[in-house]
Length: 79
Image 1 (cartoon, helix red, strand yellow):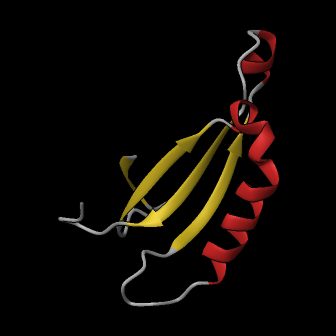
Image 2: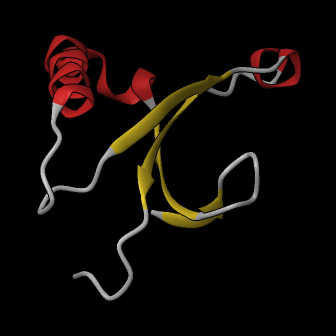
């Protein structure tokens, strides 16, 4: 998990990088978890703000798997 900034630069976000190709067997579970996380709104649960897929032409030509980034609200001091 990485610390980043929102596109507008107004707040810090937590960025979790994932590799969907390495998790093909669990793809349905992963999609369901993302769907549930998008719908959750609770003060004790960090909010999933966005899901970004990245796969560039150079990644494809080099045989690298695409990345999936889960963008969460940042919770300072969490475990």
